[in-house]
Length: 365
Image (cartoon, rainbow, N blue to C red; front, side, top):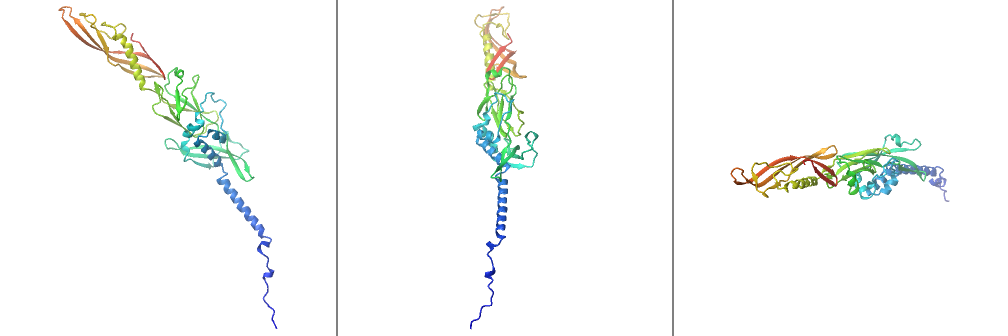
């Protein structure tokens, strides 16, 4: 006779985990937690305030002015000069002015939004661009970004607050009057641009911020001896302007031109075969008779000294030595002898000079 099993069949009394009422609730909660963590992670690393500034910096470095203008919503103030130069807003000059941003660090910081940028109804953050300028000094440019919405209802969308283009005034020192008539041209990162503005106003450049400006100027008689640099680091309020001052000096051609013109003026003196050339700052006196046609004057290369007076260069003095050769007959003995006479003389002259024009007006006559 067989015995029935007394071991309880527990398997028959169990329900699979997937059939338990709380299982799917736990799964759903886990999915939501994971999704939330992913959203938070992406909003902090991808869809963050820095993203708008990163796109802007990339456009600057690439020399892509159109994208930089669109991303920054760049604009010129209403009072910007009509002749403002835009050479720094696109292409190679823009890329060159932004080269220092290659290793830039971009971070959102807990800083107060400036009053002129503040919009109470908008979530705003300050983003710092950190880089080194042309002298390897650390610099920081702060931008404001606005939260303008979300994608798919979860991913934040940020864009730069409208950014005014910076206005940089070129202020060369010691520019003579009437220099504008020559239309002197400077080069900003090799791109030509007017050195002087119209109606006495300074020439003005439009620039993105940040930027490192390099200027060169080589006129015939005036020059900037070495390239000069100006760092645009702060974002100025719309309509504000900053001065870019630099020295302009006389070129070597001024020495040569003044010497040549003085020599030409003195040549009129040396062409006169008399002991006292008319209207000239030298002469020879003697009681003896001089053999006709034996008089010959010559003059060494003059030493010209000049300086700046206010904005006008001026000749301080001209030093030279006149040489006379002649045959002289003694009035008492009738003996003829050679005359070898030298006279050091000083004279002055007025100077007219612009970047491409020079004229010497002697006032010793």
